[in-house]
Length: 250
Image (cartoon, rainbow, N blue to C red):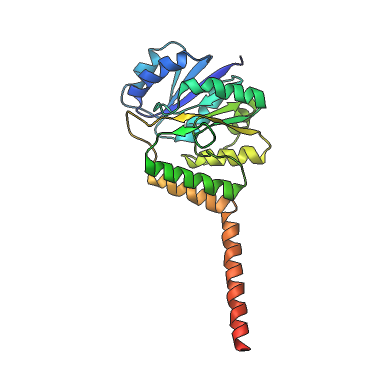
């Protein structure tokens, strides 16, 4: 089994950390890194009470993606697991994801809700938003990934080192597709593995409307959607112009 570390960005997730760490200790992990953006609920005391857990406090709310990248920089393991602290990502799926990465020689394995045998128990409206976002992503970037918004991921050391050198990755949830796009363009292999996404039981989601808007703006302006839109406008204008000219000769 290769060396495997897990990186968990947190902000006021004390009650979930208490439940998550014991489950992680049952997996074949070499180290656990909690990257915290200044929680004030006693998360640090809980995390530090467990052996083998590295608790890294950052100065304020610096964002999800930058926390993930800081975690990648902190560990030198063969593979790095990125997962949420809210228990929506099951530690029991890590083994299968690692095996998938090794078997396919993948640089990124995404824990996917939307492939065969994947499941999601999220709220209905969030499922609609998520599935719409994924369809737009595949259309715009021509990348056959069914769960681009999933934050449950396993990166190879090579992918981690590449991302650690990137200084302008989009922060927040839109950063997940920014990372996908960069890895794809630079020849990294991406695979998906079916997981069971569990609805958060404790605490509040960090996903805000601003994050959703930023996601769709990124997809529109950085992928092919803007090109498709421009072509559609040009074609429409050309058709209207043709009809206008034709009417003059009728």
